Image 1 (cartoon, rainbow, N blue to C red):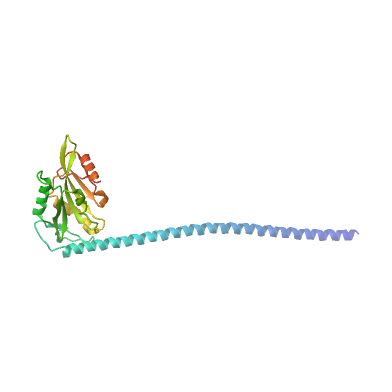
Image 2: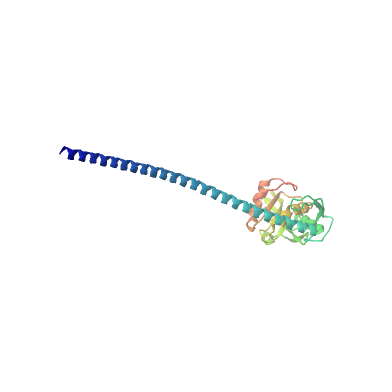
Length: 259
């Protein structure tokens, strides 16, 4: 009986040892699984960071491409302007009003002289200017537009509604107006100079307006307010009068007040 008991005890002990070994092996497997899980999580984080860096790199590449395209467009416009000025495509008209300017093509060094060919029909412009200013004349406005490469007086009148119709979306033009200001006790006349650049005017012609305006202001020099207009809604008599009221005294060609 004791022999049987001893045999059973030994077998039980052996079985227990095997169970312990199996349990240890299971714990090792679990620990390795946990470590593997942690490694997988770390790898996911690294992959996410890598994906973010790739996205940033793609965005930077897109921005570089966009900047490159914009630079190409700008260079094309500069080349176009250079060609127009160099070849005199706008006009071959030359007059006392022709101005020499240094031109540099697309950022490259050069010292050649080219001519800006905008001229004035001085007699008609001066006559219209003096007509608007005259107290003995019913003329209250004059409009000056481009005819080829010359600025001419294109219209005169006394009705403001007719003045508004002189400016189209494709036009570049100048206007000179006489307006009655004050009240019954203090009436006075004030003068206004306006520059019109329609929304359809090209970039090149827009760029030339500052030079062309300086040329015509050599004649039209006496005004209280100067306005830059680009859409029909700005050609409004109430806004004009408000600008003149803000201006106060006369300004002989030196002040600019934009609406």
